[in-house]
Amino acid sequence: MSIKHVFFDLDHTLWDFETNSAKAYEICFIENHIDIDLKEFLGKYIDINFNYWKLYREEKVTKEALKYGRLREAFDAINFTISDALINQIAVKYLEYLPKFNTLFDGTIEILEYLQPKYKLHIITNGFSEVQHHKMEQAGIKQYFTELITSESVGVKKPNPKIFNFALNKASAKAHNSMMIGDSFEADIQGAIHVGMRAIHFNPEAKKFPIHHKYEIMHLNEIKKYI
Image 1: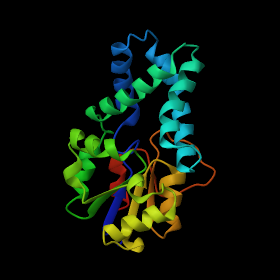
Image 2 (image 1 turned 180 degrees about the vertical axis):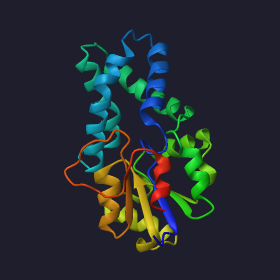
Image 3 (image 1 turned 30 degrees about the horizontal axis):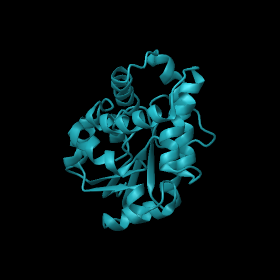
């Protein structure tokens, strides 16, 4: 492939969101004397959070509604009584603690070391701008990337073609020589293909999707097979 630019998603692709999120919530609950089973909470929260992010991508909920709603529904799901004021307090502290944890997916540093001498590397993320920069700094990966494009800086979210075209322009890249790598089939893969980019689907849990994408990997080191 005549690839010159490689664009990565951040959360769930390089940065291990679920592991780091669990650590952030653990601190929040200890500090606020919330006596619940963290695993039970996360068992409900993970799917609820996933659904809220889908709504957020589709412009059906606001950023503030996402931050509050995912917590309210998760606490309600485990029948834990908590005030709105405390939920809002936890929502703020959670985003303060989240970027301080730096667990990456296995193979992240190795693949970035492999790719950087060969390609220009960039990030396209729907994550909140105020935490994405800090995540990358704390995890020691910011230096590998030339451009970091957040949906908030563009005003639209993946899979909207505007964010991909904005990223291509900012990176001085062309769609035909650019590769997108991410975990979300809808946001990353279909979004990138729609603007003429190539794409590799990172699917570590081997989830089934209605449409098969021929460039699929379960471990980041498998990227070497394609570029």
